[in-house]
Image 1: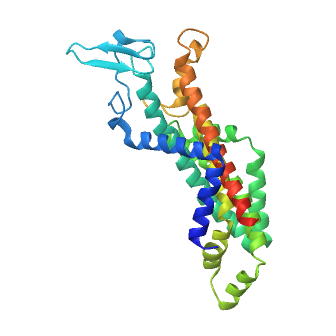
Image 2: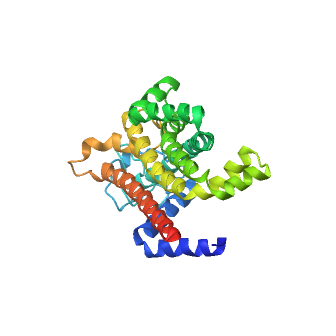
Image 3: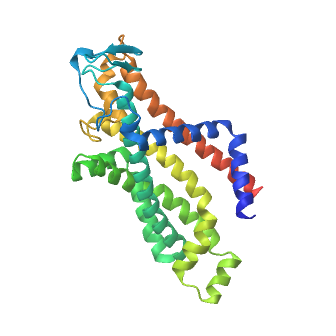
Length: 295
């Protein structure tokens, strides 16, 4: 099947899988919000951290008349410091998607390299890498992330590194299994007979044939990375004040969950759930596309 036909079938699979299409659109909207940054936020400050204690805990939909006569709309109200909630949630989308993207890229880089080498070479190399995978696999992900974060300190780049270094095992296991099945194929034997080097065979001939399962794992890891980052920020090990993250916004307001200001915790919590579900639906859509390709 040529590239055009593959592209058409991919689009058709997503059109037929409505949740995957909705998830893709939602992630696209959040990505545009994250990229646009202060240009489209009601609060144009760097981290949407402009405070006005005279406007604290305004209800969603409130309108305030400023001293210069201009009106200021707070579509999702304000928090206890008078900060615009919508702006902080929009700023938090950049943190969540940035952590997810960076972590997935790190996990793909490590997982593909180790998994490909283990699956292609076999023998002692495969045994050593498989042992490493099993060791990391047996350790709780959140515990490892906390240990790495404590070792390197608190901050965003530490979170990127910590989550990425705990997620490569899923990628490595999938890539290893794919390469073990591919290395016995006739076109790989032909490439070896021609005299192609190992790296060329692995990354130009074998990896493209294993890309489907890798994309599915990447989508699942993206959702997991956002969930872990939110948990770390809630615990105080992720994004640090004044940088807004959906996790630390929930942490600031979770005690209001049973009161009249519950939306301050429910809104960021709902965003976390929506993004995790969106990537889950996208993974399901990609899996359906794969099944159509092989049928």
